[in-house]
Amino acid sequence: MLDRLVQAYTPLICWTGLGILVVRFLPKAFPHWLGRGLYWVGVPIEIFSLARQTIFDERARLAPTITICSLLLGLSLGWISLQIWQKLLPQQIEHPTAGVKGSLLLSSMLGNTGFVGLAIVPYFVSETDLSWAVLYSVTQNVFGTYGLGVLVSSYYGRQGTGTNRWWTQLKDLFCVPSLWGFALGSLTRSLPFPEFVESSLHASIWVVIPGAFILMGIRLSQIQGWQSLKLAVVPAILKTIVMPTIVGITVSMMGISGDPRLGIVLMSAMPCAFAGLILAEEYNLNGNLVASSIIVSTLIFLVMIPVWLYFY
Image (cartoon, rainbow, N blue to C red; front, side, top):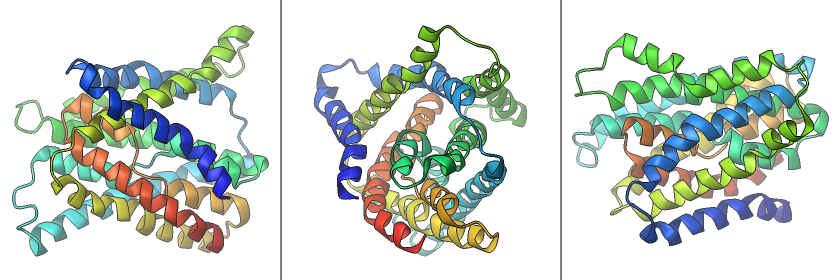
């Protein structure tokens, strides 16, 4: 199992380290434009490819419902934790800005089901049951990251700008390129593309993943002080310990067992999403808090994998 984890996390370590090393040689605006490039081009192409190429198991139809419920659970846990923190430890976070609130909620809700999840889960789940994990990832990207995540980011990112209205969030939601990527990918499943187009779509992940890891490394290198790391412990624990515990108990009570259950639990336990960095760049949230949450939750996740394998 250790060898498999090393293989899965080698790209993460290498590309993130590269981002940390080269940030001093890059233009100041580079991370912003890298984030926007991933948001508008890279991730939509990856989701378009997934929607076209994945064969979904009939039994896995419950996966989207479970995913949506887990996203709402993470959002609720994040909001409750923020209220408790402000009441019990006001000296730690006296007047959190809208950017801090939005980033904490995103980190508590969104997991890295695409970049890390789809790279790790196949090592532990049989190929016949992998559709549960794929559906979880696609549903989170569509409903979570670029649905509910956009609404949260738009709401908190626009506070104080005079444009924070419900129709503004609705417009942002319908303008999300990844939603269109998923819709177009689903509608064109039966249409054959030339082989080189299919191969290029499948290979798009090797551009998106390094870009996301490099962006994370850049943001990690820009963290100033320990305040973000302290606050990041909250969403990291919620995301990698509390949420998968509740999800695991719930799906067991639903009668789901074996590899489908393990796949769902591992997906719900994924570290905080790199997509949070993309949303933070796009909507001017607190990128330092998101980056800190990613690294803290990743370290916790590595420790927790044997625990989830033992119980499920």
